[in-house]
Length: 449
Image (tube, rainbow, N blue to C red):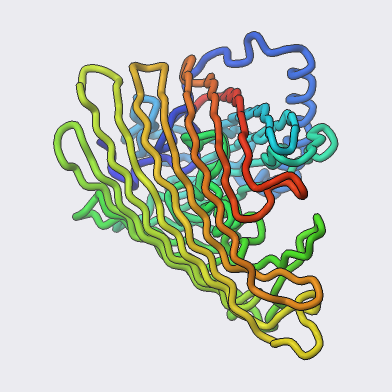
């Protein structure tokens, strides 16, 4: 089993769990003509945007270096000396397309959502570093909303980072915009999740994916290759505002509950850390454990603490059957001065919002193709709402899910999922607090590593 450090930072997989490498194939065979046109028109825009972002690297010259790392597709370049152009002229290019059809019974709403239309570009920069970028032209998954994906899809840079991953003493440094190594599933892109949707507790408390801009340092002790320690200093954690920072006004627009603190350059940053280990219980089973903590002072003071665990067991090493179960607990608190939208005459100037939650899942892979699973998620939040006055509001949401994954090949996957949502608040305005949601996901990967 490879050590934690040896896993490539940008590899994508159609499977469940850690990211694996691409396999060559013809994943787009059978796509409708309109899907070809839509996907590749967005990818054309993505390529243009990414070129503008990384074009300064084109001035780097070629150099002769020793390429001493092993790719995950099976062959090694150890001690191989060759002349390799550096920069973005010879990148490895990958494409991920994740299409989802959803239906909400309570909203009586059908949606077609191109959640991920990703262009992934990766290149080595000498013997110690690499650069990668990910441009996504997808749309957020929202089954109860009336989405018009062909109007709202637009390319955006999700990740663009420089990684020094071959430093001595087991060190790794990452700088730029990236998904921070924080929580178990928050750092995964949508199409990499083991289920269709991200658990609500994780999505609401973190704020979507763990996207951040800044610096991250990781250390894998040479004497303990199954331990990984990470620390980072970034602008914030989360692609979207977390639930603890929002003010519920009864309108569709999102309003911040706390005012922005003028703390100067460094006092407004968020620091975080993660400790993770992998324990080999037997020849066919292992246990992965991780803990995280983050604190920052942007809109008030925000703190997040999480813990995750995952157990994997292969009943018969000669077969591809695999049982996995795991979960994560999350806690968050945000305190600060109210924003002008939350402040009322005679009311308090400061407030504290909090949220707790977690999810558990279990799934069993049968051979190479089928994998059924179940998931339970719970979110409990005390956040602010405002009408004539600002006050705390308790919102609880429980989601039970069942899903079935069909892995046609390494680059092509289908997934069906059913959610039953039960909440204290109305899921759709004026239509009740319970909902059935159905999803069909079609994921295609194209490229080679």
